[in-house]
Length: 402
Image 1 (cartoon, rainbow, N blue to C red):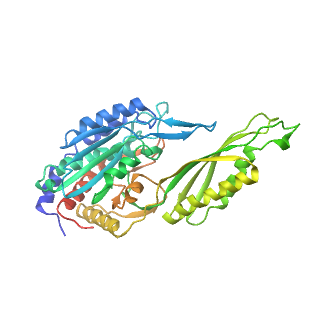
Image 2 (image 1 turned 90 degrees about the horizontal axis):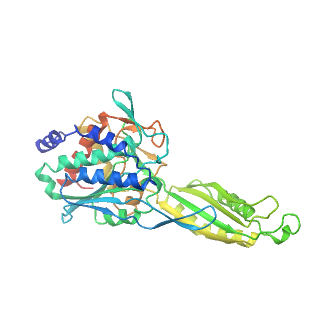
Image 3 (image 1 turned 30 degrees about the vertical axis):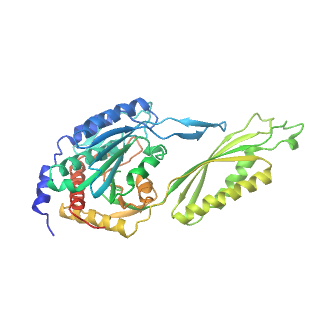
């Protein structure tokens, strides 16, 4: 099999020249998830760049999100706006392209600058995860728009501001935009520097359990107290026992306590689960309520649960595998060897797959060491992956089935 004349024209139309400059300019903007000013600046820069595409751009307000503070109070978490571009929403064949503008590096993090490691490798915050991926979305879509076949394909672009903290303020928006889509491409960096894609993914959930006991003097009347820290420790051990081959449970932090001579009446236990299957996820959620009631009764405390699964497990069903096969076939035509592997990591691809939409969620750059000051981008992969994405989109536009 070889490229058609239309596909050759598509690839010739792809302009990779602005991509590196875009990535460097966007990386220079600190857009840590909690840096609202930086996220606003980043959103404006992206809106200006993506304005080169047809369609309507909207900055969508984040959905309300709460968290539990160390003193057990439910507090609001602020998030940045999410960028949505809708192109040909009335088309019969429609896909969703997703990325995120936030990084894990807050405004006061020492990792803020870029440096060249060699002629082809750039180190910098977000260059791989995933400002490089955002540049790929733009270049691939612009190339597609030069072709007559583009008129057959509608697409929504979603760039959210909170992926690195679980997409809590954008999960409903993801689900809304995924509805009715034939397929999805998400532009997280490749799973490995050689371009390997992430295949099946486990899920994840974060919980905060607030425990309220009763304070008392540790010497005079400790028997009248109800020790919240002991209840939290009891619960942590019970949670450990709930882990099995299909799910890990990680009690991560206990907050609370008082002076040494006071029976503590307050504690917050925070933990994470990583279910490999939907059944494991659902069983845990049910079983957890029973365990909480047991600790309440045994320790004579009251317990409040907050949180839950934020990313459902992502199995790869037959339609999703066909999409992977399409990406592999397109890669072969471009001289790129595309493979895949399962991973314990999670991303917005989990949420999209839960909507029943086939998704390949590591269409971004080749690079590595993400979430660390060693994060790097292999610069030639900007053009490589933009051509790959453009060809996949063109094939979908011209009737690829999966």
